[in-house]
Length: 436
Image (cartoon, rainbow, N blue to C red; front, side, top):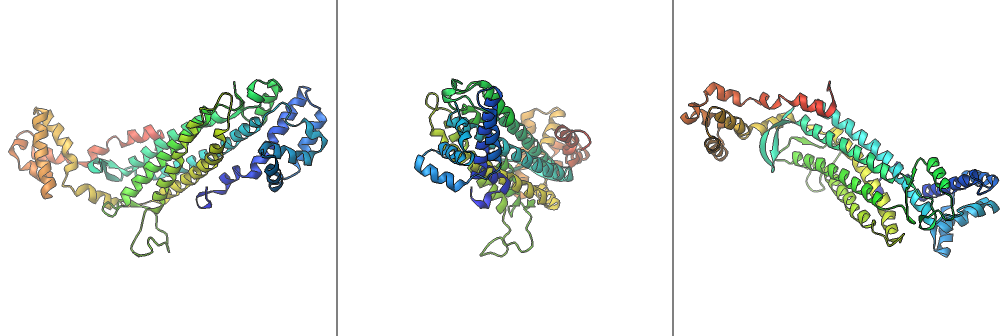
């Protein structure tokens, strides 16, 4: 991922320096596991650990070796032997390259997930705070982009909170899927390495052993992980799209914070564009696009091939880095979002009370009118108000067919906004618990 959309902590997880350090941790832990069961000298394990811990692995030197041997793990092991000396002959005994590569990817995905979970917590905090702030800020709800019935801006944000809370649970489940260790050798049979070594490495790296592997960890685990990132990205886009719509000039109900000195257009000095939310929409597309190749990686040939390798070298860093950036950007947008309650109320009132049509419909039905007749009667006046910009309430009051069923004072009550807010507390309690 390009630096523009990257945050240092997540980038660091995918650096060559971090990768080689994890590779060493895997190899050292495996050797220590072998020493524990008497399959390798304890002195060798101690020397490898001591010398490996004391150095920073030379990325340029490893790259130089790889250019000759054309194999990244062998290049690393060769460099490690230059550091360790004769005891390096006990390193990687009975192991295959995928033991190192797959277990390392698991460690990286676990670390990336920890950051993403923290990002979600930051976003959830911002959503909860702003939802409570606007719990009773009345606004118009829309379906198909058209005015429907009143809601509150707090309920909009509460819905987003509940969605991202579900996403957090999904990510925790996906994390458990990929937090696996594979140290079972060629084709996964443990023919040349004891299963106890794998268990030792798993404990050391806070993973759990893959129950049955081939030469690689089964890629259905990774497919689920990246699919989950795609779902979270889709939720980012949903909320970003809502903000973009609310900031449209014709709507004007909320907008991204526009900082002093900020400029919206090189040509038009008046512009205040929802550029952050538009950026989030684009990043969501990127993250979501990486779920499909992860699913296609599931079907490898027999016990393994490397068609998944090039895919994961790209989507592992890019998907997690992009989503990390997007979640924090979205949290910042929500935190500083400028809300215009007066414009919300103006928009709600702009249709002459049409948003109360269902209450009138139900009231007429309650008074004994057939649903079809009640619908026809209300719709007739609603369409007239829509066309001429009049008041639905007044049109209803002027219709004897209506007032024969509903008194004019009762009609006034049917146009009360309080009716639509009576269960806001119940919904908030469902989302946030009692006392919010």
